[in-house]
Image (cartoon, rainbow, N blue to C red; front, side, top):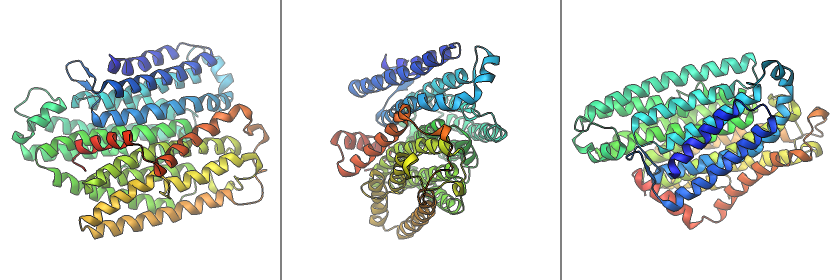
Length: 489
């Protein structure tokens, strides 16, 4: 019952939101839905694995971790969105009055909730074909959110997102077909049944299927060199949407790869998959490092940082052992920290009305002090500076690679991380130093009503710092169980 409610409540409320004309009611509906979703997620933890529709939908040890990150992230985003929408939508008020019932914010609110429903469907799906449908549904639900500003650049970013991700999903569909051929002893494609019959699968077909799944879902995940949609979409989307794209959507695509990986582990193809993970993990970190060094747009810089962290996560899973635990910990840290950074970027954009790094300075001056402080704290956390929880994840990956004698991987990992740190430090420091921030518009000054736009990212940052100082036992057990399901620990 909990499983179906987690999927259907945001779906139904999202459909209702399209027909609500009052802004306050729509925004209240988003916050209420996020609260209900978070409570139901807690119930899913208490009740354990929740089976629905003959095992097609189950929150297993891996899925429950992804569900929790998605729910927590959406809860913060929903609160942040109240002030954000109030500020941004005033630019569309005249147009909304002409459009009638399907106003600009109504489309945003409806798609926002549908996005939550589709992401929940992804993490709950145990049938691989249904999982594929759910991943594609996240693309359709999120595309109108990227087009929020209705500019030429946002239109280009939306089409780029739709086309590239749809091509990737089409490749993943071929992977599903190949997997069905490899699974010639079973009639269904339930994950648990495919794992049970993995030893008798056709290995060449299974290898080809995994490659197609990896390329297809890897495109949606933002792994290099399939990442070309990601910088544009993250840069042109509203900051609250960018936070969900980076912190939750990329994880959903990762889960699609991991489901195929679980089957390959059972079939004895673990090393085959790990080699692919390591190569593309390092490649993604390298691509991100190069582009961050020459970046002039702070939102695009955050987007390339997401490419880097997706590379770190897939690299950790490829290294195996305790590095899988580190990869999952890094995924948690990246989701919350990057969402917080995008929230702060939204504050900066609201004040300065520009994404150009060279036009922003003195963020820690009086008028933008709290956003400036959070901006620098977020930089230290996302780059893995102690006591960031991300530091623990990176350290575990490095330690495991050294323990296995993979010194080339370790050296490349450290060098690329150092380059990323240098590139991001240059950008963050240049934006915070200076004398004053008087070039910001007085009309866009963050006032007392925008308390939540400061509190939400601060809360996320505090959580990551707390994990770095004291790692709770319940969280360690949850990540250990998930890591065991992925061939780690």
